[in-house]
View 1 (cartoon, rainbow, N blue to C red):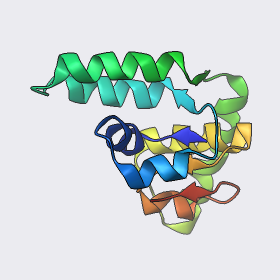
View 2 (tube, helix red, strand yellow):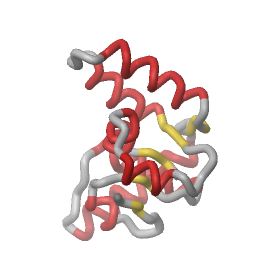
View 3 (cartoon, rainbow, N blue to C red):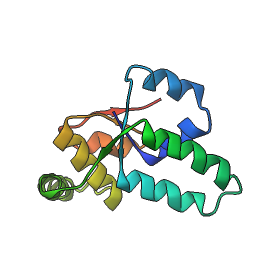
View 4 (tube, rainbow, N blue to C red):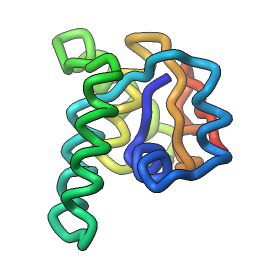
Length: 125
């Protein structure tokens, strides 16, 4: 499972319903995209130190997904498909969808726009 930024936020805030969803996998996947978005948000959080510590633990216990040439091909395909369907989604989420398609992993997210991307599955909570 690839964790979207809103899943990381909910997890680190102790969302019990998300914990049930995540319990099916021993380790999860994180991308630099998600980590960058989350760390950006931390810059404005009054709980920055505590959340950074939790994030570092999550990072050490997760698989890191790296963007590569194959990811770029999936990105281009997905962006073209969404444009043709008139269903654009945020740029960073296209990259996350590309990683999901490339690695055949579902995305854990509350963002329903991932449902518009063929070849991936979104797990909500």
